[in-house]
Image (cartoon, rainbow, N blue to C red; front, side, top):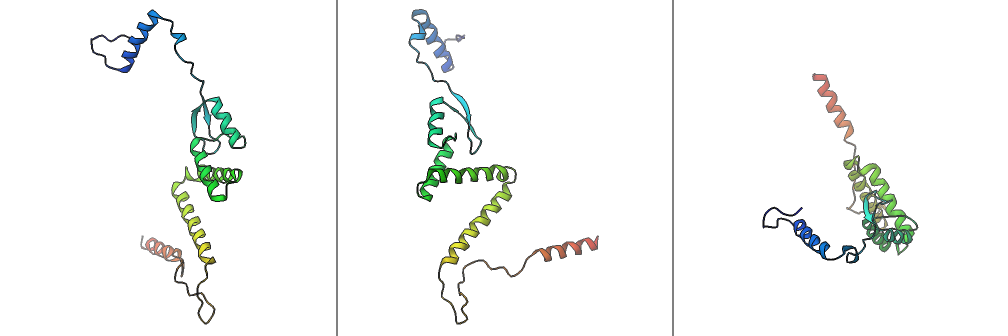
Length: 169
């Protein structure tokens, strides 16, 4: 639509006027470049959809063993390749398993997923600490002060407290 007043309020008003003037003088189809067709493609890792050209889809499938992954997952796979020595297939497998685990647990139970991640982090740090050699005392026991020691569980104390409250009621 042409604007009703002398002021142009949006870019679309300006472009409409320019296009209508050009359409009167020349054929627009000869001047406008053809746009490549885009389609909505779903990432096989994270499930996110994005608009892609068929050429881009073919390029990504060629790079990642026939799997279509989004640009974000492609960057994560590149990072994983740096960790494992440059093996793309191993990095892709590792990233896809992380995405599957996140989609299964992380979306539905974010607190549980965070707790699981912390548990894995502690396990890794304990494995790394176990490989270090600490000085041993006379009995042959490691005298490391680092690490997490647990004397007992807190569950019996909690259940005892709940039982006491139920007896009062």
